[in-house]
Length: 268
Image (cartoon, rainbow, N blue to C red; front, side, top):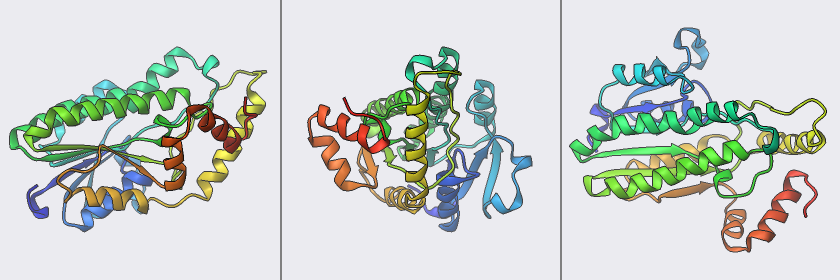
């Protein structure tokens, strides 16, 4: 990569949470940082990071993605962070809502990556980081669509990583467990749903876990380390190393029953 004074980063979802923290860390290192949010004009001054230039991006609208691509220069680092996390029973999830969620969590980041990786390939240098989720690896009730989208991101990233490696472009996924942040969570459940009580228990457990979770520093430190790593791991699970080890090595049935207990479901 070029020296920090001449390097440009694009960080999506940079108005809060993980994206804002990554943008701030890059700006502090002297990067030229472009951060996105849905409406920069409405972003309060306290939420702005000094040294970050904000541009509009609504990943749910393909035309917004194309407009952003027309406004950004070539970048040395792309952090696909922005997303949403709908929760609700798989049986009841509206198909149109699922399509909209995949546009935000998968197709939007995919399109940004396709457009910006070409310049990296030509320059034989660059880093693309996808902020994924451990839910792409572990069973997570009432997060079927979010988990599926993040699993798609992971597969896309791992394939891309192999394709562009010979051109000096690095691709990596960071997959956090719970991080104390404000990822939008739309609750989708029908009135009188037989799943309502279980969903409320799972959401209450999840809310408590998020409130007690580490802050964004864990993710920021991992991304910053990747800047100088010539071959970062394809997927880095962040947090809960013991749980991660057990999840990857125990039989799937045991992991499923354990996950059910953790989130407040009755294990089968």
